[in-house]
Length: 374
Figure 1 (cartoon, helix red, strand yellow):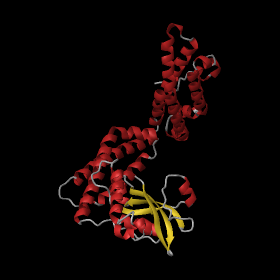
Figure 2: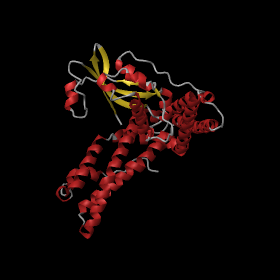
Figure 3: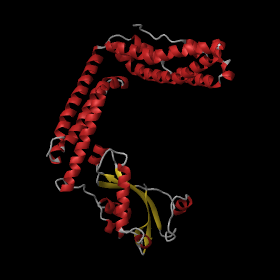
């Protein structure tokens, strides 16, 4: 194998191709874009890593060299559309092909190959010459294989009939620790090497992990429904927006209605609040392969400095006339969250999102406007 890159410098001499600016503006523009990336490429650092042999030389050149390799791969990817345009243009030109067009195509093809294929192979050869690097790579390879084996063991356990979530619950933290251990084993290696080590087992690990987390979540949901596992604890808030969010998250819809201003109470009875929460949850669940939506586990009441005039002017909110500048106390975007563990198992972080306006009525703060985001 060669021990250095063999790039075609003709591609980077823009003056050679100025005649194409008028006849092939798209190709010329694409070349200029690639030239900009070429000028930013730290080719010296890449070449130094490629030439490195042994632990000491590799350690001294690895960080900058691998950064340069990432830049080389990006540039190689940028050359793809340029090569495609050049190939179409030369095919259409046929016998009347411009020699300049042919030179650009030949140089672009060669440089793309060197940057995308040859450079990674040469860097890999340099890294293999370092005993320490090979030890790290071997450790990472073993870690990936151990991770897959452990995932398969945990998955089999989660599929056993009659097992309560209480027995499976420790797996959640075990799974988090498993991923953390794998990340630590891979961390000393470049992203490219991490990917190459993961790749042979990536699909199997992803499938096992997805099935495992799904099983844990469904078993937890079933046990909650039967009373064998407690529901999330919803902490009541101190402000009216927080109290309202806590009531919705706890499914205490009749309590939520007591926090509504008079003009909103008839519009939003407890039955409609329940329906809105269920619809919001169903809309979010539609993007996931789950039959049961996570239970609310908390809430996040945001803050926003918008004034009433701004809310009326944007045209999105239909705000009752009873909400005035005098009684307006703020605009609060809010999310009803899942609990932390459910969010981790399902990747569903919230089950409803809505906006409220707080007003003061008869000396008490109340919800004067409500809109769910579906």
